[in-house]
Figure 1 (tube, rainbow, N blue to C red):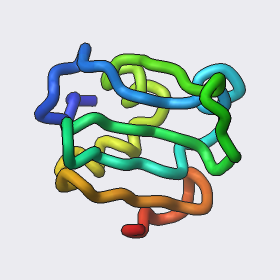
Figure 2 (cartoon, one colour):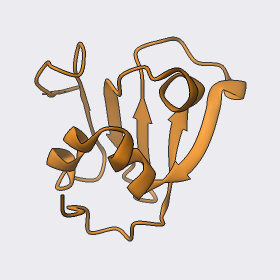
Figure 3 (cartoon, rainbow, N blue to C red):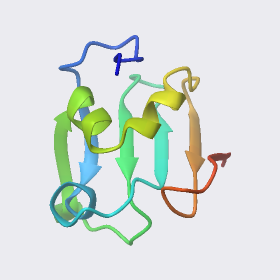
Length: 90
């Protein structure tokens, strides 16, 4: 499977402990307008201590369906109910 993002594979992105360590679905994605950072989060409430930093490639390997969001414009976010649900803009 080809890596679809324009950002380098090793760029740091934000995720949460629930996605990284507990296998929760990525249900919220945000592409920050200010610095172009990506966030890949689950639906749970988050505390600061839940944050984790991984590479964009690692996020893609966790859930390749995020590849369909590679063209998500800066400042936009999407969410879905679960891994099988379609993405919807927020």
